[in-house]
Image 1 (cartoon, rainbow, N blue to C red):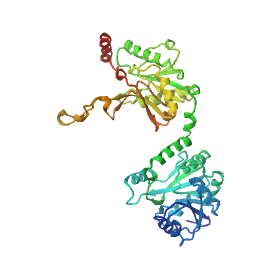
Image 2 (cartoon, rainbow, N blue to C red):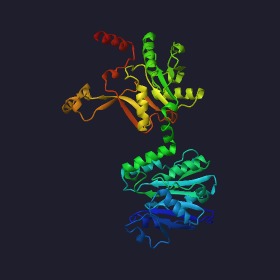
Image 3 (cartoon, one colour):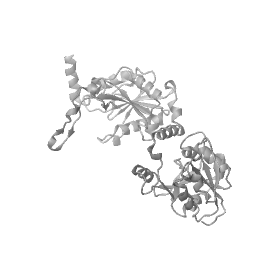
Image 4 (cartoon, rainbow, N blue to C red):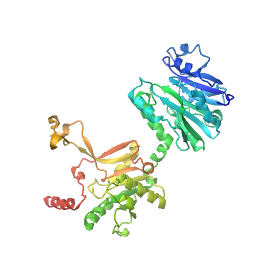
Length: 451
């Protein structure tokens, strides 16, 4: 470090950290960078945390009604430094260069904040080791769009904090919410793996489910998910995409296609149909006023390895380049024509009411499914041969082509499904029927004769 003129205020939030606080502070006071103060923000510890720090030159302030952002802001208001460092009371700086490596990046005024590496201890849980190793790599990163930030081991400029204090009303991930705001303001965030600490329990708080739910909900708010999920169906831009794979007699496929188009036209909310076809489609647009355009897929989407996800992404890209940005994508495949009446609006309503990311039609399968063994034999568990309605666990068979709905946002981000996927159960075995070739179509004629 070429200069020690910048005063650093190290804010350490604690609540019952008696096992870790001595190791944490010993490492802090062993740093080669000496121009710092330590402020302990104590969240009503009732163990020996405060007693254990009496031999260290630190200032202790107490806080009630704890929120992570509120505790940080409170500590900073009592600080004197131009640079602020946040460190968890159970994190231990790895070496004596931790502080200098962390704050050297803040000399650049375009950098709002820096966060360092977090490493597991030898006795950390395997799941925590996995998460820390995957999240905090060995390469330094300069983040211009990615707003990930982590206050267990971070630093930022005080003058930036004065413009962007931490949110005092959220229960988790105040660091990522802050990161989003500074990135949107044109600042950069740096990840520096040389500023490393040991972090025993990892970044997911020992997989606590209630915390995971809170984090998930807050991430949706930060990403703006609530805004588009609360948009009414009547004001949303919703289109239905029909992927066409011509692989048998055209007149038969056109019958299936028209059948699907007729079902789509029943929707009050999805008024535009876009068709994506693997071959030039002989179809008069005026046969349906709802068919907005027919796209022939490019050559690179014509091979047998092409996934439906690639087709959806390509179609959405073409639509949004030519028309307006879309809100919701409905996918219906002509090869699965047996749908409940007005399925689109029923699924759209359930998607909105549940505030989920995607909804997919499924069939609850109660029949037995066998695994193959050596010599083409099958493995049968005789205990499974009970009446279907008495089985506790039923498999859900995907009826993706019957109807699948998601937000266009996820397609653009190559996620396709998002995080929260809910089923739309169709307990009607005829919906399982797929018509993918000429033989399947001929079988329909046999069924028709039977009835």
